[in-house]
Length: 129
Image 1 (cartoon, rainbow, N blue to C red):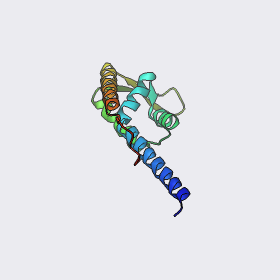
Image 2 (image 1 turned 180 degrees about the vertical axis):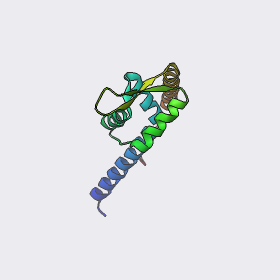
Image 3 (image 1 turned 90 degrees about the vertical axis):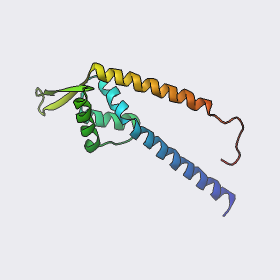
Image 4 (image 1 turned 30 degrees about the horizontal axis):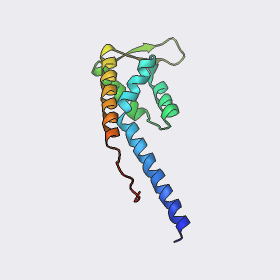
């Protein structure tokens, strides 16, 4: 195998690993993402699904989002109200004080994690990457 093919394969592998890591990060942060979107303004489930897709380039379908919304509502992080003034009735979700507190707590935790990660940067370059 020539050197050029090896370089291309390595770039493809690194790109794939990066995409997998980004997807996993988004999956693990879906709670925060949903709460932040509702915190911007009240939204119905389909709006949340489409905004996640638009902003993050990943699709979380109804089977992921609606159970999450139900769980948030049971825990008091959001509340819902039916909007029947449109041709298609929609359940509109609004953030609660508890939801706002959770957002603040999680975002502070993430800042601390990021700060800690920066302290783990390599002190020497590694040529094996």
